[in-house]
Amino acid sequence: MTESAPLAVELRGITKRFPGVVANSDIQLRVHRGEVHAIVGENGAGKSTLMKTLYGMHRPDEGEILVDGRPVSFRSPADAIEAGIGMVHQHFMLADNFTVLENVVLGSEPTRGGRLDRAEARRRIREISDAYALGLDPDTLVEELGVGDRQRVEIAKVLYRGARTLILDEPTAVLVPQEVDELFGNLAELKREGLTVIFISHKLDEVRKVADSITVIRRGTTVGTADPATTTAKQLAELMVGAELPVAQKRDSTVRETAVLQLREVSVAAPGGRPAVDDVSLTVREGEVVGIAGVEGNGQAELVDAIMGLRPLSSGTVLLGADDITAWSTRHRREQGLGFIPEDRHRQGMLLEAPLWENRILGHQTRPPAVKGAFIDRKGARADTARIMREYDVRAPGPDTAAMALSGGNQQKLIVGREMSARPRLLIAAHPTRGVDVGAQSVIWELLKDARAEGMGIVLVSADLDELIGLSDTLHVMLRGRLVATLDPARLTPEELGTHMTGAASTAGAA
Image: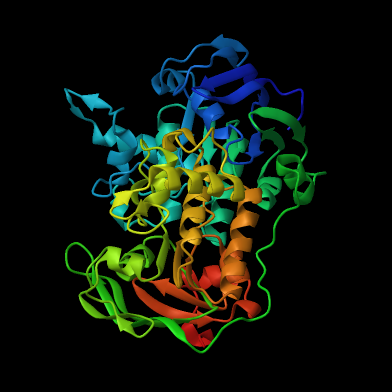
């Protein structure tokens, strides 16, 4: 993309303040028509706030937004959509029990005689799918689609509404390598048709592969632009956080003989009675990281819930050390040394309206520093929250700040600090670095390595294949609720792992 191409979007001096926080300060951004423009930066750098401002979810306190060279003032996402800007959020917003057609047209239904004109909707969706190589069948139920196809439905939704500029928020976070390649093919089609893509990502190698230009944001302001053809991932990381790109790499084996977790023929029923987890047996030893790989929706979340006591077993046994904990409550499991970094920090890990010190004691409210005698120790909890903020670089004004005021990465660092501070025997880490920048990612990886070296057993569930391969001592692949392969991470590439995850590989290579 040449600099002579007209500007699709320009942000001039955008500043956005919240109580106690300046999220964006004098942001400058120039995105040319027909390019893929990446925005990278640390968590808390202001990327999400900036994109919400562009999409009409926030109004800037200062500055100007121009679309196709004309100043605009958005009061809502509807205004942004009217101006040709659409956004695909990281967490999909689809109704599983609706078809692709119904999801795409929802809220923008073509009608004839007061009724949904399905023929016209089907024609337009097929036209969009063919034009941009999305490969969608309008009549398929969304619940039957994999993650990559669901993402393409979200892209079709914004294209259906006439978007000429698409904002994609962490679009590869839940995709296996083959699906990432397919997405990048879709983005190439969008470019060929003259559309513009703003691509937010923490994966710097992917950014360099797909982007035509890159804007780097640090601590709320733009620090520069980069040409991916001449900029290395290391240089980008240094621009973002002043540090080199971390590598998920194990140290020498620390695996001991003592089993800290054993699952014996564990099954969990999904709604409707079919097994979400089907006859799973595995062992985690002291000093061992056991990775669970799988395309999302194949039973990993239900398996984590079963270990934590959040979901009943339909059969099987769970042992923590020598204790049969199958019938134990989640609280009892936590008190006996089970730590938990949840997949969805908002649903399972935090109270967003509560202050940080209250979030610090969640799940640990029966033990110091949360309590003194029979009462909550607010002073002790605040002091320990301040310690976690210092040691884990949680950026917020103080322990009384509401959790909702923090960026996703800072929320995640608080949760990791909370769980590590309890020094559990076994840590269930579900997507521990999802949505965090390279600096925070490096910190979390080092914490997991140190905990492993000290004898902690870790169950690691992640969509980051490099993370799984780099940190795991043993790696299981989960497909349709079953463990279909056990692999040696030392002799495995992300592409090979992705093949197992999608079921394209036989299990002949399983140990």
